[in-house]
Image (cartoon, rainbow, N blue to C red; front, side):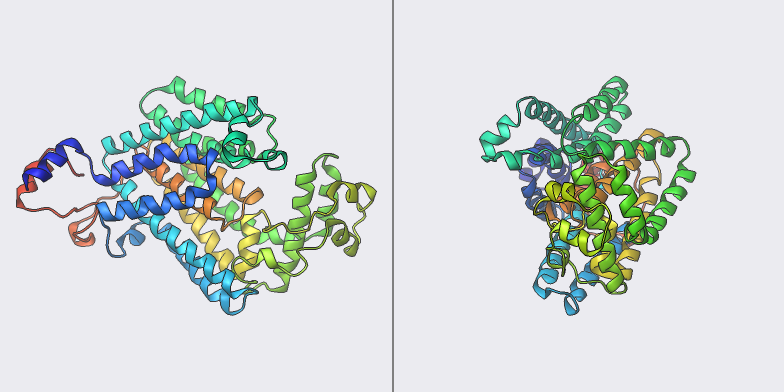
Length: 452
């Protein structure tokens, strides 16, 4: 080893990818508030830098992380759907972007899973600092009517109305790995404070997705802590049931009308989602096998109908002056169905919904595979919260959302207590994070634990 290399390692004793992930952990929470649209670019930059500093070659990351394979199959379907979709350009362009996110996310996940405990601890401390900044700023923005966001982003009152929905959801999901880390280092009071302050910061906010994500996360996390095997099987069963039953339930006029009447007079967003889901279920029934093509929801025939006109066409009994006054010129389908299961089945058909279900089942198994009871529960809570948010708020292919999910998965993987499986050198390429390239003079450095 040269003297320059040795001096560099004295300054930066940890693997280079650990510093890359620590940087991402610090900037991601702040970007969630001020620049959520740039999270996609952040993921790609982090992935590119990590690849340059410590390359991973071959297909072994996919072999050791089988939950990524269904995502690859979804991308293949996305590219192929250009052959029968409504807009060939949209399908191909969206699938190409998702391929880049999958490549960068897979690389960062691979690095995160193979780091030693001290490296993971450093990343978790960085995430804790970023989370604390986001939590304080979230409180400040709510108390000052988004003063800082108005100053920095020049938003109007219409955009300010629900501008905290995106950072609120990410704040809710980030609370799980942050609290899990604090618990693992025996800061139990601080972990409890995170669990209390996070939902408290969202009470009364327009967007309810963050609060609902926390609530559902606890429903999944508590049994995962004490009954991991039963929870895993029940969660996997729920995924299968929802995949099969949701299009049927959403497409029922009886369910729609009764649910619509049961909601409060001011539940405009919830009522609009019911109509979107009903419309989407009808379109799924028209092309159940192959779907309408990736990213076709925004150009779906009939999606630009006014809500009142669509309701009158279907002869729903709840249509009246109040409905017209409430929804005004709102269209039936605003860009996407606001439901992950329905959007995937709408655009990629039966095979797409099977791939999505397979991914979720494998992700549940990975989250519950091992680790201390608290860490296992936090990973499960974050996963359940992310699925909840994806089922009520965001488009499944939105770049910022997909990139955020990959980064959240990385932070879940670096939690102390998540032990990677031991692999023999014949299973791992020489140029990898597990078996980094070295020369004969590096043995002494390896013995000191510079690389894991």
